[in-house]
Length: 185
Image (cartoon, rainbow, N blue to C red):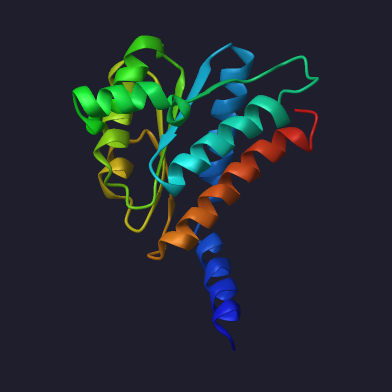
């Protein structure tokens, strides 16, 4: 077997660790948010920031275009000038929490994505979300870290390899977005 065969096999095993009942629960929260005009905020760092942005785009365009019910989604990761201002003037640890303080309402959703589950800025975002009565959703890898503990809904990919964790997180996001794109609900 080659490295690529091994990677594919280990990715398949990582995908098998996803508890789809939790993904279904997240879909229910997304349905409720869409029906009630709630906002969904996404955030992460590095590759997880890309996944957060990608997920927001899939919901904003793919799952909303030409539909009567539409998603309101904000990728906090895409606010480059705000992120750099807070990072430079205060601390990178607050870049998502401070954005949420301007917009987040009770029953909104905050989706924080982190392979390690130990990034202070996403932990603070979920802690703040819980404090105002918003849904604090974490997608993590490894053992879930502190982010998993801060979540009201925690979807964990029990895998050590960061690439496979990130692959699985994107698969979860696609499961969710395409469940709206491929169906009438």
